[in-house]
Length: 396
Image (cartoon, rainbow, N blue to C red; front, side, top):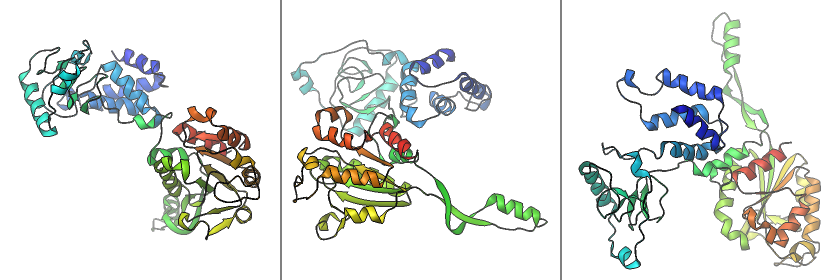
């Protein structure tokens, strides 16, 4: 049976190898998950976790695994234990029931507590498969429970769904945000940023050196000789320049997540703000940006070439703001933004631009094309794949 499961995973473009699959079979044979020898049958959930641990090497592939797993087993077990089995063939959508607006408006929505109580009662009462109707659990009806029908507040059991009105989805994909084509959360950003690492032991001796302690104790005829060593830190230095205000307002949450992840991952992090394009000064405090500003020339002199320069901005502005003196929307800049960007990229040879705008719209923005040209095409989207690409480039 599991041979077809292996082929399903391969069809989903998961890099599952034969040795890994054999490892999974050996684990099943050895009774790693509960089986008859342990006094109970292994659940599908147990098998899911074992199979994922044995077969998936990269957490960005968890979502593909979830979809392939659900496709092979045609659904997943229910998350709430009502001690009643729902036949898997119920999960097949066999009927599309189109209701008129008047019929949909006539269906009253239940509260959550009442919904779950009623579901438990009907699971205990119902003994067979059901299609259509407004009471039993099945497909294509107007009951709050089942699949393919309509109710303004229901529980979808398996399948793809369609009306998007379910309160709880039984076929939940917990790792969807790990897909490397999707947007990120702070944890995922940290995973991507870890590609830019160069560890060194610096500072005071605070960490136990286990190998050194064992060696010293053995050399000291068994008398305990505790050795300490400096903690291991990421030695990479990062200079982060972030666009703020204007069109960047809609990206505030995502940039905050990126900033939080950078502060967590990089011990040597310096950051400044700019608006639309970098000109002759940057700042740290947005409320006092004209009173407490740092000359860009001083920024270039202050930090060495070993800093990795990362711009964060949507690069969405008038082309004049990049190409013309006086093009800034806030003040009369004497030199163009293009000149300042060239100076910065010359001063810091390892650089990249992270753009929170969807990559699909880049070709329609003239200013983005200009920034890409000035960045030597080193512009990456704010996605897991984009960040990993930028970190890989900066680590070379």
